[in-house]
Length: 505
Ligand code: BG6
Image 1 (cartoon, rainbow, N blue to C red):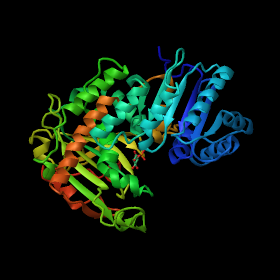
Image 2 (cartoon, rainbow, N blue to C red):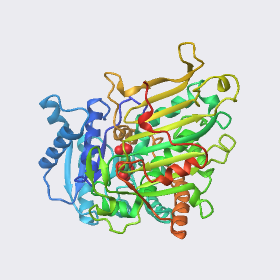
Image 3 (tube, protein in one colour):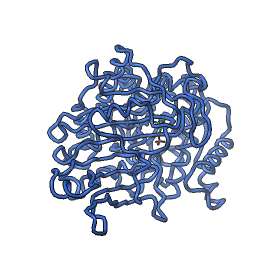
């Protein structure tokens, strides 16, 4: 039986590969500290950080302290708490391909088992470049670190999970030689965000929404994931990925499946993931036939972002000056099932857009053009917005009469903002994800068949872009993407909802 949320967890060891990397500093160390503060870590907990740099355990503890000072939502409040917390961290230096390193790691983990009664419960976190995933898993297996008689072994894999379906399959096979599917935790950090967890509650715990959640009442859905930042020095990775692989294959399709899935038969991880996979399987493919009308690729040029001049993508460090990589994607798809037939889902994501914002926007159908829709000015379609970030909440816009004698209708709003309330400091996605991996709950991680179907959808788009030489259209940094993105939705007589204008007056 896996422990319930809030139950005390069995002692275990977290082994982080890639201890000196950015992800560990920005996300993992702070997440561990916040779990500690919230008393959600096991009573006995050890972290073994592994890196290739020459460092002492002392200097790694200092790194942990620095990363908490800089990135954690909670800061150290007392010196003794700080010392006790830091004493959980250890460092082991070795190259990921070096057998001797794994031998000494195995020995060290045994010592920890004896000292702390961790009984072989190890969670391996691969916070390294994807080309090392398979090799590390194989080495862990070869050194007897992936099987345990009394404890458990689990592995967390960061994205990207492959570059396309073929490479993802290959990586998966390699991982499966070392771990079973239920021991593999594939991260999509969006699933750890509060509002994504809340989305199922909003849908399935409210009689107000669920009966309307279908093609009879919903006109279309927009999913927006816009970012202000550019590629932040990640040239080589981004050149090989582009926005389609970096954002759509994982985060956006996760948002889409959670929005569209049927109610699961239970809240068990597999019951939920079964429903998500059905949505992916029902996605209308984008291919050579509809690529031009259903997708737009963009790339940011120079422009102005938050009042300062910024360079274009092709001028970024370690980016090909003639690069054809997209930093913006807009696409239109449909879900071919009884609930959603005929309802377009428009997805839009990009870097160097005007604001950082993620939301799911549900636009309801208009009522028949009679009564108030004929005689009053101003009625608009109802709109429900699930705000994922930076604000977390739910926004509902509906029609009401403008006070006075004129026959006028105005849109009015109900705006529930979860993280605006005082005292609410939502946990970071990585806190929840690490905690669930220690509990053995994989609901918020991606199962292999989800990855597989997501890649099928994405590969078909990439292939069609390539075959038809679909160009990337430049857009000025700080704008809402190429003009063609307006055309994609305008062709259907609709328009993008500007996230900046989703507000109560
Ligand atoms: C990552 C992408 O997965 O998600 C980045 O690789 C992107 O390119 C990031 O910036 C966005 O995450 P968040 O949580 O800041 O919206």
